[in-house]
Length: 155
Image 1 (cartoon, rainbow, N blue to C red):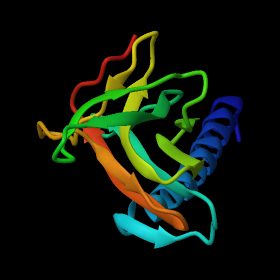
Image 2 (tube, rainbow, N blue to C red):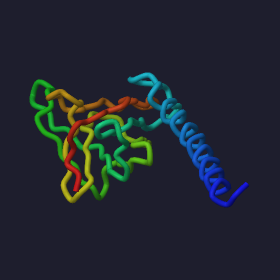
Image 3 (tube, rainbow, N blue to C red):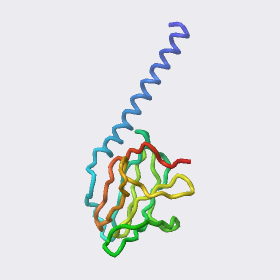
Image 4 (cartoon, rainbow, N blue to C red):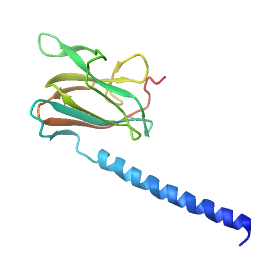
């Protein structure tokens, strides 16, 4: 076998190996996505949790901070505003798949907040004008599912 054919063969083998490795990573992401949206038991006695996947045009948003912001309600219990003190708010950073998980959240109502810059934004459900406000329940994890945005404030 001449040198050029041998190099082409090596490149093809490396390509096939890399492609098969990526397929394994995709299956891990698919496992996360196939998880049922809503609450599941986590066995915590004093806190709850939240998780989800943040995507931008079907691609993972990597390294973004997700915070749990305090919700201010009106006299009827309807959310009016959210705020976050980043120095002590529960938060997580999205991984290579856009996945985040925040544990040990005290029971209560929270706004899911996004930051990939100095600013923090209240997340809306994709393609809707509805803020993501969740009730954290002791002993439960709320899974938001896959949130696929067409636009996010990225720096």
